[in-house]
Image (cartoon, rainbow, N blue to C red; front, side, top):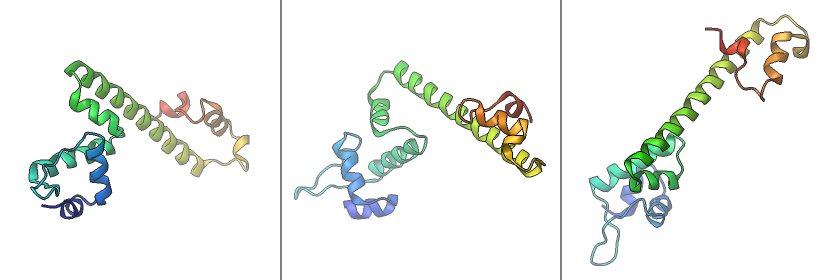
Length: 134
């Protein structure tokens, strides 16, 4: 399969596949005429790259995952998972805050102790009041 067909199958532009090749993530074989040839193995690897990008990893981090020692990979994944858990906690606290806003009876947000507490603590990081509620 040629690059245009591969790009269409993956839902990306052809320049994306060329870029992944230029940074060392993909190495599609070339035909005798010099055209890139994408088989199912290469497409599956490209799908893995897409999924890893969705986790928030950079192309350089993805490249390192493929080349690094097992301990390095485990450490990188552990760091990313910690970042994801932190983001989840922030989103959950934000959701609780928004739920509070729906019920808040103060005419001005700054008049509400709970709203003010959320706003001033670590630039909207989960606060004890909102993070502890379930």
